[in-house]
Length: 138
Image 1 (tube, rainbow, N blue to C red):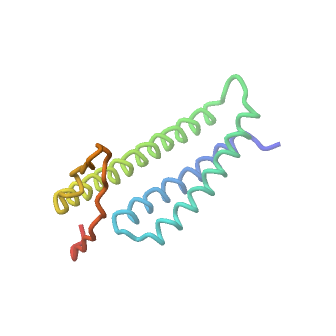
Image 2: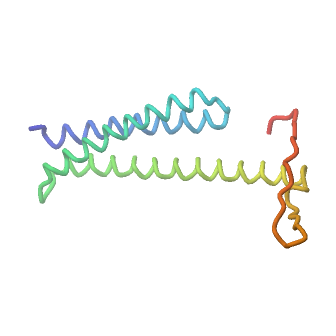
Image 3: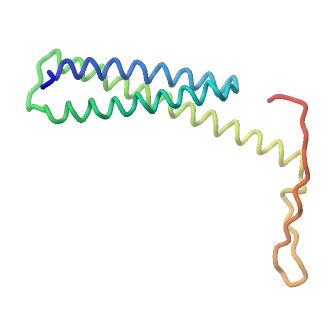
């Protein structure tokens, strides 16, 4: 059976890989490199599965009191998990802000999308969307 310190060191290594992938994902989104984004998402999913398996192994070996080395490794892993959560939140915020900005631009450029038309009997009639072509990168 694997030693808990070995498992913690593997978890630490996997968390380093996850954080690296998250940084690559953030850069791929900013640069709009969708192939790199997809590649890193696939890697991150694989690393996440590895981490979950290691975590399950660690939980199966769980003991009441940890040594100082085990405790320090667990604190390092927890801090990396917090960094990962912050990275996810910041990427989500970036995507939401970008989406809102583009949505606002489109609503101002094509104002008829906001208007609602009603038929004689009061049902909503949807207009056919008009195409908009922009020659700018936001």
